[in-house]
Image (cartoon, rainbow, N blue to C red; front, side, top):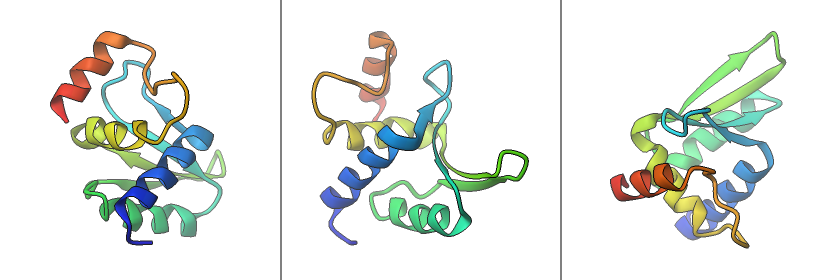
Length: 105
């Protein structure tokens, strides 16, 4: 996959299904996977849309892998995926924080 719109839409769906943002809406976004292969593939894929500092971690006790988008790229990532979300649902529940991060991106 090389089209940035297709990649953005893919990650919007991934984030809706298996993603989360830290509790203070500031530090990172993460997507959970059941295996390393998918997490590593997505780490390479997300770099194609300019998120080059993503990391993959193995949480053995939980039996999952996580792709983390760091704070420095969180606003950019959320701006990308929000354009593909349907309805009025937003990644953030805090409108002030949403505006602040959108201005940073």
